[in-house]
Image: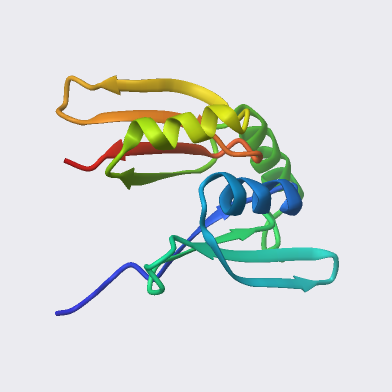
Length: 136
């Protein structure tokens, strides 16, 4: 069986701020920017990896989401506990320096973890946890 990760989704509550973070700070390519009924879905991905994308989406665009669920999602996003993603880079220190220079919300500086990886953590403009591991 040949299966690969094609796209993953993260919520955003400010499409322009999210676009700036993923495009300008992390250096991702913009692959699509689609608006519909006042909402935006922005597809980005790492340069040189056209088969892997991240879709930044409105958090509660699904019509099946109840008002109580919408409130919960908004509250969890505000706390930074709703969604996250794990990225990897060969030069973690360079990525971290870029994040710091862009005034990203730093959660954890590069740290050698007891479980065998070196990583850092930041939050994107929507509060999503972004952990970045160093490739070894």
